[in-house]
Length: 368
Image (cartoon, rainbow, N blue to C red; front, side):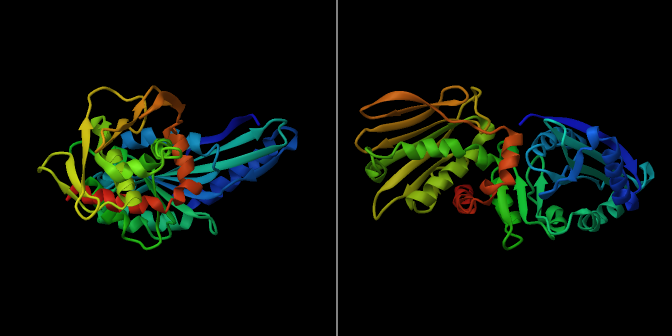
């Protein structure tokens, strides 16, 4: 069904204590102005709290949220903590509200969502954020915290916002390039709260790639080649090293590999014990060529002790090229979600993937 958007208010400055009052007034006004007295429904299936560490992150995250909420109605709280700004540059806390409606074809219903932006200044303002978040979230609705930009690697930065959060959303693809131990820091921070569901946009982007890799060993080939693996190579762009490690962590968990031992310090190569005596060499090889896939993984190659080669290569979005012994090379469709689509998935069933923490734990072993 086609819809069109009607913006009722955009970045209207309000007193922090009057946010709910201003939103209620906007909805009353929307009902009066609606064409043919269309029914106005405030839709909210999630509280979405978005942490933006700086203005650049906020500028990146806001349009992505605007696209995502067209599919998952939320009350969005955009947080802009600025602990280093002097209070003299403005009050400790300022707030703005935005309200928009999706109008269904025929104009018989307006499904409306709301966005509240809160900017805090100095330590005093930042300290008020957790209480404000608790006061402004819709009761009896789950809450997700999206840590936009680089994922949190400090428990002190994240801990005060986790109370009442059901799902933590982040993107390990945004970890700084060339920094060892990033996944380990993320895993440590994410382990702070029992029962907290983790949704990594980087992991969600690799879903179709993982499905294609698994299909290499479907019937009639079967799993036998996996028992005689000799080497696994991942060809990635430099920013995709976290994605590559998560893929290796997924393989390690599914195939029952032992703990990986680094071949040489500083290199992206490991030996993994896969039985009483056998080992598999695994490597992440950096390529300077751009990948057409958001996850940045250009190819995955499996080689066996019998000289067999199974490979998945980037064939241009949305296709992957698949090759295997005695099988003609073929191109398969493997759609990869954009960031707004991945964010929608993170708030859906795929955001409850119990396999992700297992893959993350195994990926962390590669940083040792």
